[in-house]
Image (cartoon, rainbow, N blue to C red; front, side, top):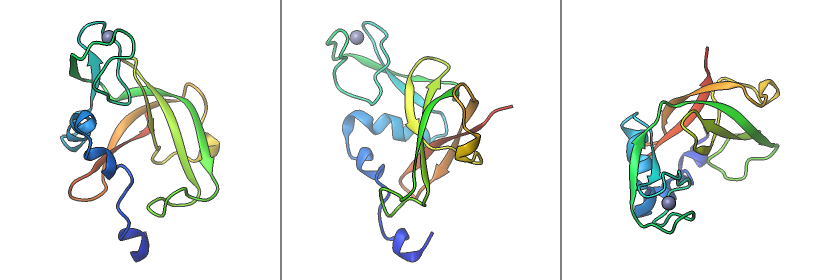
Length: 140
Ligand SMILES: [Zn+2]
């Protein structure tokens, strides 16, 4: 990372500011990933939000997940979409074992090694003293 990049706050810092997604980032910082689930119909709410789009309930709970999942899809940007990212920049969709689908990045997996259904597990990366990102590495 260059010094110029280090001055640019990671875009996920914006998410920390929103009350509805705060518990997600708190759980990443605690290295115990939790996802929001509707307390009424059990629908996973990802991204986090105040109201369930399935049943309109305003009641939700934060549930710890295993961090195990599989690659659903990905895209690689030849040029990073934000100065905080390296180029090329790969974004993945991961289907967690419990059901929610999350947007993230991979660690230690080249884009040309990605395939639909590739088993992955969560790893945590401290972006700074406030934000911890959850990313995915190949699982055994
Ligand atoms: Zn619901």
